[in-house]
Image (cartoon, rainbow, N blue to C red):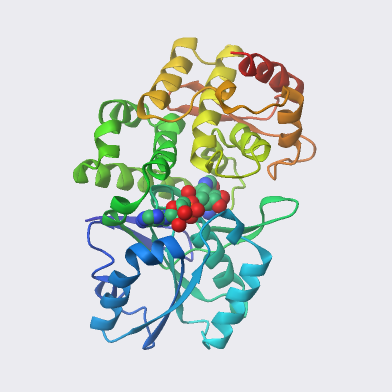
Length: 368
Ligand code: NAD
Ligand code: GLY
């Protein structure tokens, strides 16, 4: 098992990465489960796959699992499900010192974390991430949120978990498309600040995706350690460091918006395409060698992720995509910061990008 310390001032915690952590849940959570009844929020897919393991683990440790099983999918990050979940936690008489458990992907983690952030002005929670994306990104760092009619993740809070248990066994039941979507976030850490890790992805990505346990542990632990270093320095995304984690997200967000935040394009797939676009846009501005941008595009395609927006059947022009960016929550005083690249492993925040340049660039990408 790998243990990564997330040393956030005032709210430090551990991320443990290994196989069989759900089965030893009570031992892993020693000192945290104060009551016999343990409230767990999950979704129906995850409950079907892993509910019994968690339930048995709690039962053997003298606890009783109390479930809130939500519909799978992005639609669950809603005011309605937030409100109903908070009411359920109140009915369960959860107190501020109690822990709520989030068992699921980023949807369940974000919703449960936000419910925990506002319940009685904040109770504790534990993340049991069950997608690769949640293990390497969303369960770590304390961003919690729901979506509203105006857009994704527009209402939320920073609220750190007390513990994250990334059990690699859960990845065995994850659909391959979801696994690949999560892999995009793994590659992201290499592109942001670790050329050596990108080279590792080049050499080992396929075998890691295919299921090699040692490679999976390395990929998840290395990604979590990278994120931990960043959120320790810039928990609230105020210095620009944490903003680097948005590499590919501004382009990706526009693509997700254009495809209706639907199954047509998963978040991680949008990030993969967005990273390719960020690399190519950086090359167009003379910041990054073209060969490096195409290296990123080749790597993304080689593992089976999309790398050309022309294949998405978007049926829109570049102005429409650029307009989606105007609604990005990262807009700051009328400008939209973009994460660009000077090299593989050398991402930086550019605040001088004109949206008209982005639109011209996207025009050419749509016609490729
Ligand atoms: P998700 O939670 O919707 O899970 C994807 C699908 O996989 C769902 O159908 C789910 O039921 C199923 N699933 C999950 N684990 C499974 C398992 N082990 N076996 C079988 N099926 C399983 O999607 P996601 O990609 O994990 O998360 C996406 C969400 O994360 C988005 O809402 C995004 O905004 C958010 N996010 C948040 C942060 C953050 O820092 N808080 C970072 C990145 C993404
Ligand atoms: N996923 C981006 C962040 O946590 O800041």
